[in-house]
Amino acid sequence: MTTRIDMNCDMGESYGAWTMGNDAAVLQFVSSANIACGFHGGDPATMRKTVAAALARGVALGAHPSLQDLAGFGRRIIQISPDEAYDIVVYQIGALAGVAASQGARLHHVKAHGALYNMAAKDEGLARAICQAVKDVDASLILYGLAGSKLIDAARAIGLAAANEVFADRSYQDDGSLTPRSRAGAMIEDLDQAVAQVVRMVREGKVRSVDGKDVAVQADTLCIHGDQPNALIFADGIRKALEQAGIEVRTPPRG
Image (cartoon, rainbow, N blue to C red; front, side):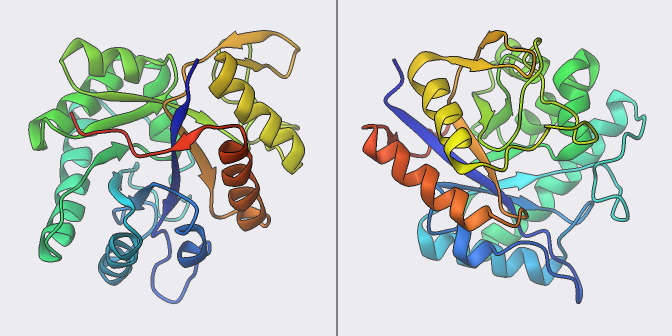
C-alpha cells in the first residue's frame, strides 16, 4: 500500500501577452512542476520566472517538452520519427536546464506534454527515443510517464529512473490510457469524484474505467491541471484529502 505520492502540475505555459493558468497559486499545493520549454507554450521570460517561483516554494523543476505546435498547444497529433522526437526533447530539456543553471538549480525530471505524451505512451519507438534523450542529457533525471505505459517500460529498459503518473481530473479507458479530451466524460469536474479516484489509486492501485472496469495502476506521481477553471479548488481539496488519508506528498528522489 502506497503511503506517499508526488503531486505535479504543468505550468509556465503562458507566452507573450497570453496567460495560461494560475501558476503562482498552484505552486503552494504541488511538489513538482513541469515547465513548458517553448514548443507548445512558454517563452524565455516565462521560463525564467516560473523556475524562480518554483524554487522559492521548494518545488522540484521538470522539463515539459512538446511537439512543435504552439498554435495547437501541443495537443494535436503530428507524426514524427523517433529521431525527430529525440532531437526536440534534447533541445527543450537543454533550454530549461540552462535557465535553471542560471539560478543555481538543476532539473529533477522530464514529462512530455500533450500529444507527444499520449503518442509515446503507446508507441515503443517514440518512447525509447524520448527516454534516450533524457538519459543522454542527464542520466539522473526521472522520466514521468503514464502508469504502465511504453514510456515507463522504455525508461526501465535503459536504466533510467521512472515515475508512474496518474491523473486526478481525467477518466481512464479499459487499457489504462486516458480518455481522449474529444470524448464526453474525459475530464472529471466534480471534486469528490476526483478525490475518491486519487485516494483509491494510491491506496489500492486501481482505477475504475469509464466502462466500469477496475484497471491496475501504480501511482508514483499525481498530475493536476492548472489550466482548468476549478484548478485551485481541486489542488487544495486533493492535497488536503491525501494528508487526511495519511498519504505524504513528497517529490521522488532523483535517479
